[in-house]
Length: 112
Image (tube, rainbow, N blue to C red):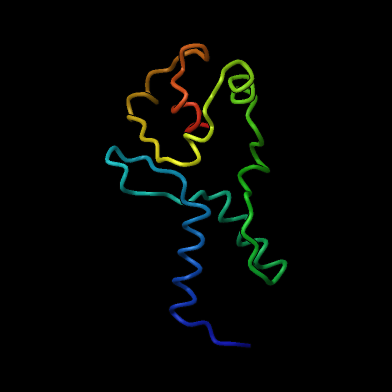
């Protein structure tokens, strides 16, 4: 069995961060948090299959939320905006609940 180097560990952590650290809860948007569910599923797959399998495990648990599906069906949303640019949403936008017709699409995309 080949020896695992520090560089190998750093590469794996970087790849895991790229795939699973999509959450950020601090007011300055500096501290990113790994998705616990996704990391656990990743490690489980690694132990069972004996190989690295980066998957979108969150999708298994949540799928496409119906609120997002309904929103996209009822509006013209420029999805390219969400694919090609980084969107910042103020913390207060999450605290104040709104209804679907008045919801900020950036908040909806972050929540779903």
